[in-house]
Image (cartoon, rainbow, N blue to C red; front, side, top):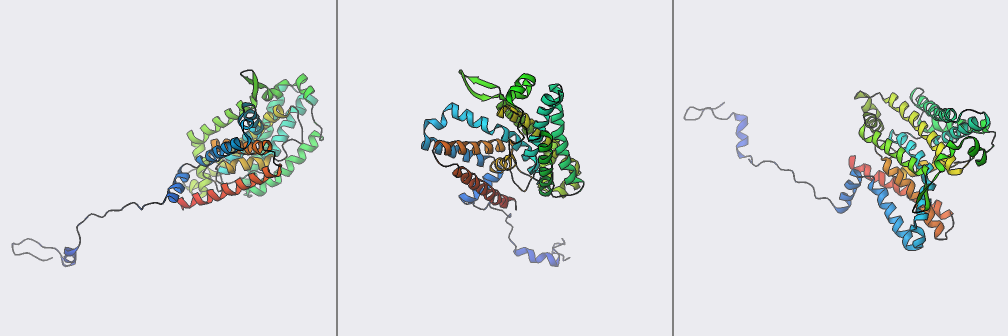
Length: 361
């Protein structure tokens, strides 16, 4: 330490080198972002906007090509009826995919549950409320089996649910004996099971069925669960980083088990809607439901890598598939172009998700 002429202590030797340093305060200017970069950040913040944009483009495009037949209330109501069952099933798939898993057995659970409802009520003479409740319990039990395979045996969700898909399908064919329960029998002995097929009239026209209302109720409930409850935050945390969630005190295995069990219950609810939609209990219904539910979830903006997604986006994704299917049919094109269009939408949706994830990386 040096001393000045007036007796005060001067700066130390190592501090003298700072006398020529600038005294200006450091500033950090925000990097100017290109329009593409801004779009990337916007889509990262609002991933649900993507399916809404696709839905709007599809609606405008088919309206211009097909004309008034496409946007007629009767046709739009038919589109909603056609996607009702898949949309409910896709809600279950959304919960699972948000945990970075996948459930290939959702369609098989739905079919098995609705067969049990019908067989117990019609063939076994069970009271309808008990048959209905046992169908719901069947769905939950199937979901819990999937959850136990994933959490207790640590099996990859893809392998675990691929196995149970075959098991549940076999049980369905064995228990039903591949026989269909007809509409007349249901109307006579179990009209409650057909309730979701009840038409809803608007201005004297039957545009929707009660199944559409059930779809909205299921979507609203699980939107609330995911966005307003601790369980919903745990689901997203487990999907984003399971190890970090565990270190934060979240019971990751318990959360996964609950998600698969609840997903099974939703599949059983979809089975009830399926009875109303088809008007019968058929063990051969919904054979493509597994892939259709995944398609709706992916197109709806939910990330296959977990941690991000939206129930609303899933509903819009299901509507996109229904809208494209209706538009292509009304345009007079071969049905193969519907499959082609859906395949393109899946690839584009996953590619956009990968691009958006680079923001957080």
